[in-house]
Length: 384
Ligand SMILES: [Zn+2]
Image (tube, rainbow, N blue to C red):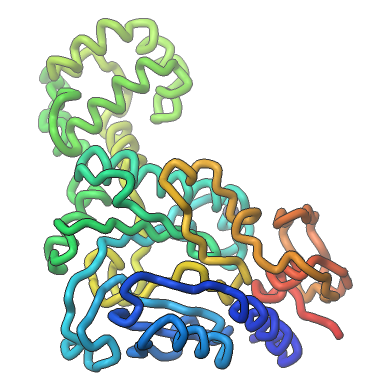
């Protein structure tokens, strides 16, 4: 828990942001809102506002630590239970979070901390979702896709299209199952894989869906060089041999003949390849964000109560590669604050600050954004 002085200071910084911020969203009066304090992300929901001014008054008056709103639109957004709201439709949303990626770094620094490896990995997952699934397989155009950094360690991807606006939960679940490769296994791609004496027939690059994806990724790895093949899980000697014979192998794959692909433990290998191609989405306690239309998500241009960073809209899919959350989501750039470290930190890069590990008990004077970040992460407290 935050101590009283740290909470008061954090709240006053948040208020100073909301006083000048332009927090808007289209169809604001048809959305359900939920708010949280510094301890709990959603304390209450089923709230609605008549317009932007009303919301602005609420944000500057109550200064919530978390502001969430529904991707769904309703006729009566504040009605309850949910069934009474009169659901109109919803964008298609995906929730990606670095803690779902099973990264080795997380065992070192724990779930509460976010390092640059975490940030890069979840960004890659986001690019994979868009470039490998939403655009080629579902045919959405990039200008129908919106991306928001969550303000901590994840992204929300929104698809705004008339075709999906009215889809019910079951259809949304089919989309999410496809993207997470539900039911996709080595045996599904190569039905004969368990029979070691049979010729290995499999998908062609022109095939639709997961089989075609696997074939295309293999051809692309073969063309890219042995390092790409090693990154798929091949040994160095297998990769070398495959790369040398690539012309022949690619010709085989083009016709669905995979017999020239010689790999030891091919079942394990193909399971590894398919696993890496799946998109790992967040599954919260109350179900998957994509299939349930009743979720609330962080509102763009609001602050994240665990970091003080901005939940930021990224202007286009093309800008995502260059987006650095620890630089581009930094808000409180004016002023410095004194803090005391209360728990040994991990190395931290934020804004213009590069810090090594700091020990508990140490006092530091830092720019407001870095001080606030460490306080809200519960690694420090504000001192007067
Ligand atoms: Zn990490």
